[in-house]
Length: 451
Length: 64
Ligand SMILES: Cc1cc2nc3c(=O)[nH]c(=O)nc-3n(C[C@H](O)[C@H](O)[C@H](O)COP(=O)(O)OP(=O)(O)OC[C@H]3O[C@@H](n4cnc5c(N)ncnc54)[C@H](O)[C@@H]3O)c2cc1C
Ligand code: SF4
Image (cartoon, rainbow over all chains, first blue to last red; front, side, top):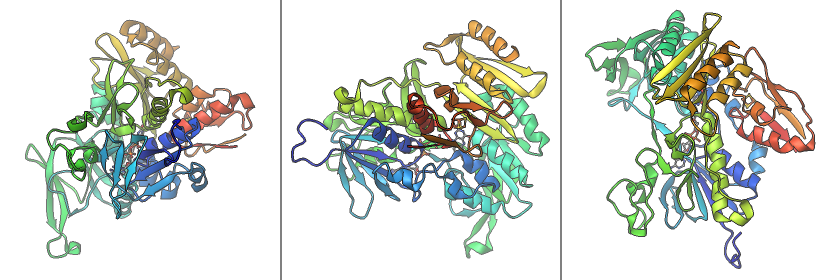
């Protein structure tokens, strides 16, 4: 790599988090020509696998777990990785680019560059630890545990949180024949993202399939004795709502969002390293490198959090140069795109002559969701809209398009039941080099949808 | 270069069509990928590799 290599060990790049973003990063690094050491550290025991099928094909039982694998063993072998699965990264000394692993040897890796791709962890409900019948849904193990639970017929499932994950799981469990209560807004699943009107259409779909939508905020669970769990065993019998009511359930899925996995980057993660400063989140003031851990790992427009340290995927909040603000996107497409971008820009920082100049990361965010055979697809940013225009095709409420805007700009589009060509036409409305003017975008939106 | 797609894994994101429209298309009914050219010419290899890398469902495989 650098000219002074003589006698020194080969330089190393370490990617932490062996899932969608981490995989994209290592593939991007190799494709661009990184021929130094390449370490991929992941605390899960599995090679990289895909999460979106967990709440869809895996939960419904139509896929066996091995189908979720993102790459074959040969494809992974071809990347020539120093692959460390089942291993947690314990601490990062960002200034020294030194990574400490939580393995038996407390391995310390000196790196030329580091990509942080540790994703997010699911939130839990207070007081549910050790209570049987309470589930979260983030990992393969989570999905298989819930699937096994739902293998017995006639469960009463309460899903806490009516965001995309809760709504998908409610749809699958209903399809399996269980009685499902979806606790959240009560009127508009995914309403925070979709807005009231589209949310109400989705609510109608859920109700038509038998999902009970319940307005409420869960404050905890109600439990009863669980003979299977020993003398102190507790089993969930319901969800307690903040307004005093309860929802009876023998199975509870907590889908109330997630927290970025940055614990290991903070001061306590650093505690192992001598001289760490204990005060303030992410403080590393002693050597002048300060990671911003306010909401995930704060990164600049190149996905850099500090010199030689990059972030990608669900964990990374970065400055989106076209949108002109910081953004953290918890969607599958972004994980891949940002993993590739972080790889490219890290190499550019290490050796611009060889790898070219860094490029700002300015993707058109994308997500999809499948519920009851309905596929929602969205580009751009739907959240935070102050105006939303919804059009239904041929008066069919399940074939719809929505344009979301904020402060006079079009920010996002949503489509359901539309042909792919129309969806690509919608994408173009929010894929420009600058935020689109609302009125212009609205006219183009009507043409794109109605032809 | 041999390209294969797994329609069963495809989630209809359409990224492949944006990157390599000569090689990939999507079905009108459900947006599932359609392979137009299983042995694309050399000048499309880079785009096809890019499509395989960014496909969010790992539904595209490329050999060589
Ligand atoms: C059930 C489910 C359904 C979804 N469905 C959709 C969908 O339909 N459409 C969509 O767009 N998106 C969907 N998503 C979101 C999508 O899966 C995520 O955006 C994507 O997985 C993010 O990838 P990532 O690599 O950034 O993070 P993650 O996938 O969270 O991976 C991070 C990895 O890092 C590991 N890790 C964490 N801390 C450490 C540490 N200290 N040391 C080592 N390893 C560590 C974690 O265990 C994990 O393996 C879904 C997510 C879930 C859970
Ligand atoms: S990019 Fe992948 S998931 Fe999207 S349409 Fe193409 S093959 Fe399907």
